[in-house]
Image (cartoon, rainbow, N blue to C red; front, side, top):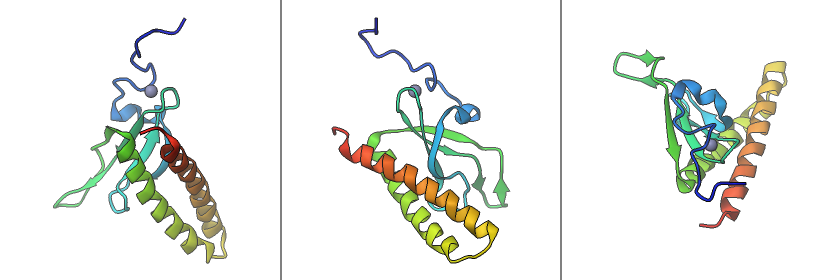
Length: 129
Ligand SMILES: [Zn+2]
């Protein structure tokens, strides 16, 4: 019998950045030189949204040890998905002009990402406010 009150999600409740691989990657990038900065991830169990970042720049240079995982509300998830969609569309157009294995592989990856982002944007738009 299901509990009457929502219980903490066993998959994502209290998740640390090091455990972010428990979450499905929807799109975006964890790399600091990319735009938007942050991967949109989703819990497969409860549907909660997260932004995952792994690296950041500082005054000296590249820092590779500062992962973060932030829970997003629906509006924040929608904004990140929209920004990631614009980047993926641009990247797909760029790699589609290349006629080599690397270009084809990247184009396929961005096409997959766009499909996931499109599905997410549709779901978010249909969800009750
Ligand atoms: Zn969850």
